[in-house]
Image: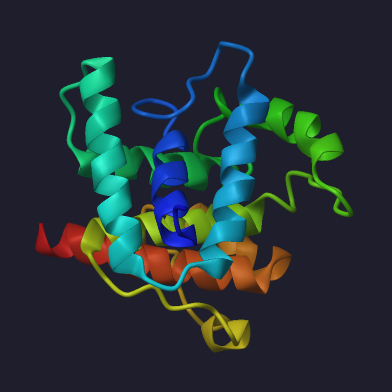
Length: 192
């Protein structure tokens, strides 16, 4: 039976709508948001990022071969990061795609027991997913947020993700995950 870590690696490949994931425009927007929700639940349960990475690489390579795509696993992770940013920013980074994500969010409401999923509720799963993908991209340890207040003074206004600054007031935990992701992603830009 596959572990949580392996399932998480597999699920992550499905949340990359422009590469290996469930694509837009096929009436499967609900499925895209289901993947995001599942990833956020699995992120909380995973306990070995190396296993997540191994599963992710194996699955993404198989998906790329199956689809005949000549992009790297790193490009697929960037696709996941972009999708997460589009959702977390509530459309500020991709006004064309955001209505499709909203369609999926409206559709998932009846599929999650005991929780009303909305655009604001999607922000935390998106930020967790963004951070997980950044950790895999940079091969860095995933640090769970236990005290969001530690990140309240972080400044991301001078980064390409400046519009996520509004998360500080909306959801402190989401903001903390976004800050950690941005630190990794900006490090990549500084070194690359």
